[in-house]
Image 1 (cartoon, rainbow, N blue to C red):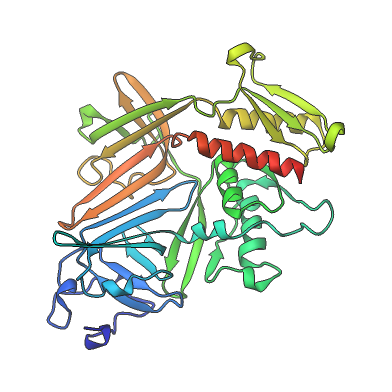
Image 2: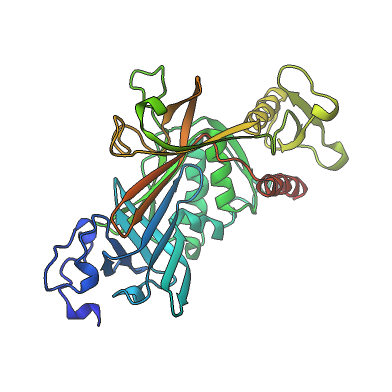
Length: 401
């Protein structure tokens, strides 16, 4: 059974939002009344199929990292053959989500006939590009400073959209108008992965990023998220607490993994001639309580600049609190996507303690019964030792280039 056997008039660039009716012109997989159907699109933006019947769809929205998704369906589901590596999966909730298929797993035996598809949104492709712009001129580094949005946009544009070598440009990716959002940041790029640059600057600049599919002109639009203050003391608070009956489950974790309280910031010198500035907040730590980090300050020219760079690194790597809460998304006083969203700051009250935290992850889950579950991660997700070590190693390697 192929798609050509059925009415395909809706499979065009304006058909992304169409919810198809239950009629005899569609196969059984398309007659399920699911408000969140999944579309399959090829790399040329041609719509290949729409699937209403699946066992599970999970989409994780991340503020400082690419989104990720998992789709599970029966291997016998009509059009399951359209889910192939390189194609794109899309669906619409409060925005149009689009992601490319990276992994496919088939499990078929006497008890199971399951197809599991995973992938990321198009910003995941930044891991396939390194910073080459300006590496053959001047100092060999692409040094940038300014607000986070402008600096991040520069590295994306020069290496992924308007690169001097056209073959490096990613298809259909566009940056929306630069609004100069985010904290002041600086970066010296040379052969770094664009994914690392974007993630590092988004974290330090307190500026998230997201993509949305525009079906009219077949583009993936990359925009930035500054977030809105909905904390307890704001004019428009969003509060989660047991008394409000809007918390289903709660997991609060604190971690000192990767904690830093003193930074050695290197200047622009080289080898033995390179000077280090010691930077700490309040009083100098010592003994077992002293946790050091090297910070590359080769792009700085003054002690004040290196002090600011070191203080930012210390603040970014302080003891963390992460709160993961499954909340009632649509059956409470505060509705996800309407009253609050990814990047906003909200308050959570637990045992007489109020946490004012930014929403850094939103896990959207849909099952075969069309049940939608929303789980929030508040505060930065806890660093793993491996990730922190990788980041520190990259900084050391960069210092040697």
